[in-house]
Each structure stands twice: as C-alpha cells, then as structure tokens.
Image (cartoon, one colour):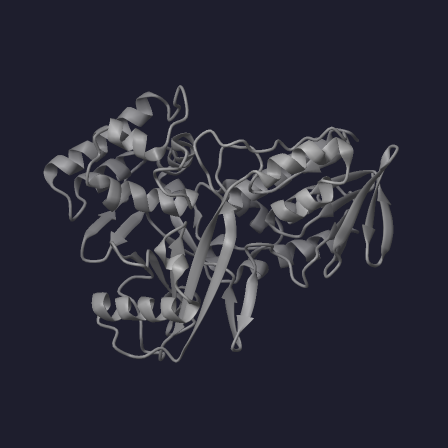
Length: 427
C-alpha cells in the first residue's frame, strides 16, 4: 500500500498518524507553508496567535487521544475548566464536582441570573432529552426544539450561547439533532466530558506539527507548500499532479478544504456529483479580535461571555498561555459585525471591554482575523457528503463530512481516522 493524503489539517494529519502507527509510509501534501488548515498558528507583530480561538471539550476523546499519541500532554497543553458558563453581570452557571449528570442538574438549579421557574424549566428540558436518549424522530431547528420545550428567556441566556459555540450556526437555522449529539456526549457522559479545555499552545504546535514528526519518524513524508493541482485516476492507481511533478499512489484520502476538494473533484466525471454537493454547502464565519493591552490588564476569568454585545466570548491569553495583556474576542456565526471594517470592529470590542469590565486602557495594537468560511452552516437536514466516493481507492475526510458532529476539531479527527482505518482493512 502506497497511500497519499491531500491536506495537512487536523483531518489529514489524523489520517496520516493512524496509518503511520501501522507502519504504513504515507505522503502528505499541504498547499500552505504550515500545517493545521483552519486551525493553525499565525504570527502577528512577533506574537504567536491562532487564526481563530478554539476550545475543546472533555468529550473530544479522539482528538485528545491522538494529541497524546504524537507526544502531547493534555494536562500540560491545556487549561482545564470544569463546566461553567458566564455571561458577565447577567448569568452564571458553575457545575459542582458531582458525578454526571448530577453536576449539570445541580449547576442549573443554582445558576445565578435565573428565576426558580427558569431553573426548573432548564432541568426539565435536560431530563426530557435524556428520556428520548438525545435522539429526535426528525431533525428540526434548534429554535423550534427550544420553543417546543418552552425555554423562553433561557434561549438567549443559556441555549443560544451553547448552540453558537458548538455549531457556529444561529438557532433559527441550526440542526437540533446535531446540537443534541454534542449535548449527549458532553453533558450525559462522565463529569470530565463536560470540561472545557483551553489550549496553551497554538493549534499548529498542538497537533499537526507533532503529527508531522511522528509520520516522518515512521517513514512517511510531509510536503508543505506543495499543492495538489489535479487528481487523475490511472487504473488501480491515482496520479496526483503538483507543481513539483506527478506522483502515483495506490490510495488517496482527500482531506483538503471543501473549496479545494470541490476544485479537484469537478474535472473527474465520477467525482463531479460530489463536487456539486460540496459546492452547495452553506458556510458560517468566525471573527477573532486580538487586542494587546499593557501586561497588567486581565479578565476576571480566563473565559467569559457578554450578553447582547458584538463580543460573544472573551479569552484571557495571559491566564491561559502566558501572553500577558492579550485578550481574544470571538464572534461566531453571521451577524451585523460583518458589516464593519476590521478597524471599526476592533474599536467596538475595546469599547465593550471598557463599558462592561472597566478596562479603560487603549490597546497597544490589535489584529482582526476573519475566517469567512470557518465552518459549514450546520443547518437542520443539511446534505453532507459521505467519506466514500465512486473511486474505491479515493476517500474524503474533513470536518464537513457526514457525521454526528458539526465542524469541530473532533469531527475532523474522527473523519480522518475513519478513512485511515478503512484503508487498513484493505491490507
């Protein structure tokens, strides 16, 4: 077996590591100069940032396991926070150290900012989901599900922030079933499954860079700045055309971005229908506003949210990663913030930090990173391609592929590992 992988993001590198662990030399082609795809480290003003702030959940077992497999240390590489949800001066939920699901139920019953009636409604909703085993007879939107369970004000304070964070899709579009999949795994497993893990490293260093060393150590190759320009089926093999020449492989896993995958598939008659399906997928943006304040500036918590502001979530990179004075503000999904110039948006976020938290200092500098196609728009009943194709030796991986999860690192890793394991059955 002589496999190749197109794309050095989390899906592609997860596939590469899975194959390398079975002593199969694999070749990875990555078009960029660095690995990580849409979860990668970037340098700005001599400061290491990410192209977007991400968090992991304790239930992301596939991602956490594969990080450890390539040499990571979860307790060292992440700040681990027990389940908590804080909208500054408006709402706070902190789960006590009880076995699941008692920790969540107790957290809801003691949440600040809710009436006794609202707390009971939230608990009844969770218990109702447990009774149906987090499975709907038919997918509907999140807002339809929440209204059916009479969640009222809880929608804005609790469920909408969770939905936006998990699915990066507004509640009036988002798939209720996919949200329930995330709630099932994070809130209905062990207590640790609901923990939030904030990375202390940039996302390239966290996994893809380590994975590249692992693959090379096991006889494989990782070629950066080497884009695949064409996929050419050649009998039982597949030829990949790059600027550096043509290469033939027995099997290929395409783990490139959706746009790149569609471009490669479109000219191949057997793959053109999949290209059309990929091109029909809607997407949602994520904006991350980095503000570098003087080193003494810090937030009351490593992570907290704002209610009814441009800013949705704030991360104190000083507390998390030792980057003192660095605040990352995350704005997920579509919204009016997209109408602003980057300079205006950074000024709005700084103003909100002043108004909400009393941070009157002027940022020393700022950087806005806008991923306009950060994730698929995880809408109810959306059509997502499967990992198989009409070419039996060509598989498709990525966070947008059909599965239980939305566009998350866990979804990407699961997809890559699944494709690799399918190839291993052919040995």
